[in-house]
Image 1 (tube, rainbow, N blue to C red):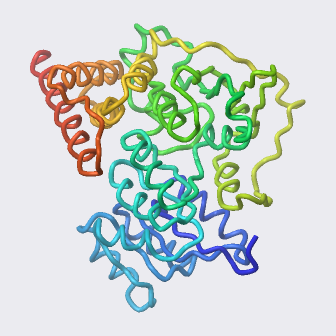
Image 2 (image 1 turned 60 degrees about the vertical axis):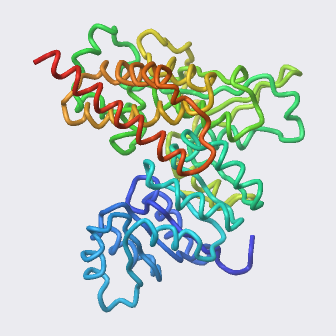
Length: 396
C-alpha cells in the first residue's frame, strides 16, 4: 500500500455500486482521495457527493444536466462539466484506480479511455465486456492496465483463480440466486408485474440489473464477462443456482480441488477487494456465520423457464457480434417491460427474435472498433424496438 492516499475516480457515483464505493472510501479518508466523480444525469445527487468527498471534478454524462450541476456547485471551487467528451476527459485524470460503474453503453468510452492510461480499472459495467470484451481486454494488455472485476461472482473467481495453474482449471462455476421467480411455473411468470420482478430476495441493486436477475439474463451476461476476464473457453463455464447467495463463485481444478469464495450478499465486499488490491483492509460488511446460516443449497438452472440464460450461452458460443446484439436487444426489452409495454416472458422472446433477425441480415460480425460496437448496438436496439412495436400491433 502506498504511503499517500490512493487517488480514486468513480464513474457512476450516484448508482448502487458508486454509493457503496464512496461509503467505503468515506470510512478510510487516510487511505483514499477522491479526484473525480461522474454520474449519468442526477446533478443534485452528484453535487452533494462531490462536496461531501471533496472531489475537485464532477461530470454528468447528460449534457442537459450540465447547467444544473454547474449551479449546484457554484462557489465550491469544484470543476463541473457535462457530456461524453467531458466524461472521457475525467476518466484519464491521473488516478490509481478508476471504478467504472456507469451502466449501459454510456460507460464504454470512458472505461476504455481509463484503461488506455495503464491504471487499475475496477469494472462494474457489464456492457464493456459483454459488448466489446475482445477490444477492452486487448486495450488492457497493450496499456499494461490491471482489470479488477467488481461483480460479486467475477470477483469471487478472481480471488480463487490461480493464474499459475490456469492449465489445470477444469471448470469455472458462477452461482445464481435464481431471483424472485426461482420456484415459479413458467405459465405463472407470464403475468409478472414490474413491481414483483423488482423484489430481489437477496441483493439491493438498480432496476435494470434487478430485472436481469429475475430473467437470469444477468447470469448469462456474467458468463460472457467471465470468458473475457479469465483464460478459459465457453465449455469451461457453468452456472449453479444457490438461493442463499453465500457462495459467489467456484473454480474446479484437475486434481479434484474446488476453491470457492464465500461472503454475505453485500457488494461492499468485492468493492473493498478491488479498492485495496493486492492488499486487504477491513470493511463494515456483516461477518459470515455459517453455523447461524446452517444450510447452503444448490440446484441446476432451468433454461426452459429462464430462456435468457440459454440465449446468453448460445450467444457466447456463437461469438463475434452475438453478445453485443444480445445485450442491446435485452436493454430495449427490459425498458419496455418496466414501462409495461411488454410482458415478462416477452423479454427473452424479443431477444431471440432480434438474434434470428441479425443472422438473416448477416449482422453477427466481430466488431473491430468501438465504432463497430456502437453500430451493432444501434442495430440491436432498433431491431428490438421494431419487434416490440410489431408485437404490439398484433395484440391491438
